Image (cartoon, rainbow, N blue to C red; front, side, top):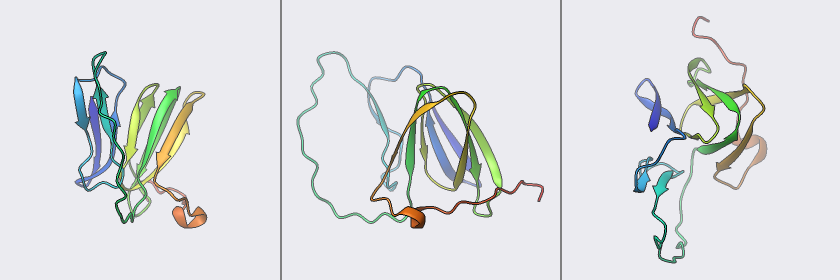
Length: 138
């Protein structure tokens, strides 16, 4: 159900595959992540109490993003701090991925529709560094 992409003992990504969910609320991220991800499965008639989120000052140093694959297939390549490709994964319709650390690049294997969710505000060119990938053999 949950796949972890781990490089050198660091979690680069969490993938929630499009499979039946266990009943209840299940957070798949540790409390320390700046982006929280949970999956939920409730029976018809379940009531979630109305609530308001409190204003809480937070400090975010690293952007973590979530992709929801609506349709199609996507390859995700994972890069370490030396910009060397270390792992890859393929996502399909209904899969969700939290990109937690390291670098990443994408290749659409088919026509694809996806939704990206990440912290804001977006700060333009300061938000990311684009690079030419290296291979493990360089």
